[in-house]
Image (cartoon, rainbow, N blue to C red; front, side, top):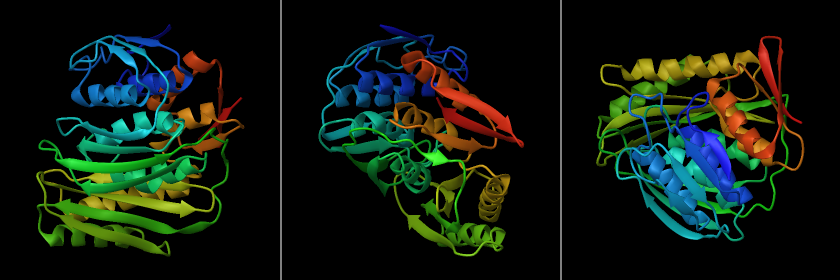
Length: 338
């Protein structure tokens, strides 16, 4: 049985998500110990329980220690199966992180997988679901992944109430991606959204973002105003190139003006676009499992080697042996599979 130290490196839920995802794909049992031991609230949180439980259902796994607060989990996978699944986190925990845990195993199933996820769609310390839709999934599709996502209801902290559907088709094997160059610029898309707030909040956020990107042609930021159980706002921007997508996001906070939110997101995206990186700092670690499992070589360029990326590479290499080489050049980081 594979043994994983859950406190290694970044030491958060990512270790768990990657470990159980690879366990399901490779059909190799895994024990994860010391789960989130360095965090203020150690052990499993509700969203981790939901994520592990979701992957377990995808592969008919037996799981020990699957409870909030647990510091050790044993995951014994069975065969991956397709079908329709519904998972409710029960809190405003991130549906995006649950989806991340499920995507690779679902793609390796023999028949399509349809997921309905309930919880938070826009929460701190996790990618907004629109980042998944506009950035993560388009890049994953470069490896052969086929996934469509719809945000049915938005969910913000603390009430949650979000609902997302995802449809994932089988992918017999991932293919390598060469992201050493961005390719030609084709425009910027995005969404400025709010729930249970005046419509001018979305308008001000959207216009500030577009003003901040005025030097770039083809900027289209869609407004999305809704009502629902929870209240909040945010913005996601994605710069599209012939070979890649760069993204940034900003989540509303009490006391932060809508204009400041839109402007900050635009500034972050513009800086990423100028950096020479072919993936943003958030996507680097998220691409690691796809790159590791791909049948061909892969290469990406990032602005920095983040702790999340280092941790994800460590987990992957525990299962697969040495797979990555990291080279610093011209102030950037080139990450290749070997």
